[in-house]
Length: 253
Image (cartoon, rainbow, N blue to C red; front, side, top):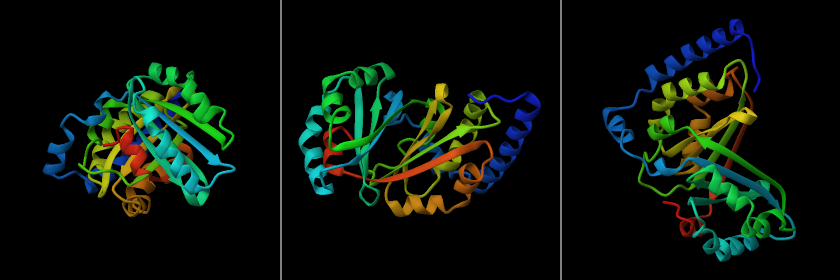
């Protein structure tokens, strides 16, 4: 993790916190939202998120759709898998999945198994494989989970590195600002992510539509909390359509 002396860290934290106070005053959740977000969330058993992406080579989008539906039942009984959401970004030839696991250990078992090897690691039709894993920040995720009883249509995966603040600083910030995200229109859930060892953080957002996600991307909360935030660098923001049929087989709500 990038480290800075205290005389640089705390001013950065203060600047960021002041900016976030503005968002809280502008986007405080209604009483109804507050009541909703304090309930126990379906993601409460999810402690580890795996995000897999790859490009297709030698097969078409339609071929992949057929493959996904055919192999989805093989993933459904995996030990410790809470859900897998199958992803498609046809325009950029990028596909993959967001896996919700009970623990990092059960994910590691999957990664070392035959299904992972055959379906992903040694598959000649899936190239430029990326496989990232994250601990779930339970506190803020409980605030932004299960906001709508609706099947997601669009998944947004955001990652960044911290600069000028520590892991503990980020944990505090996430807890503070989570209610601002809970009131976003069309947001079904946001899972807050942490990979402290690689200084990589972010979130997996489940949206009712791509249009709702674009409204967020074009809004003040996104600009202040992410796009222009000096403490979050190397920002990556990827969006995907949800492949509904195989995702339902692998326990997507």
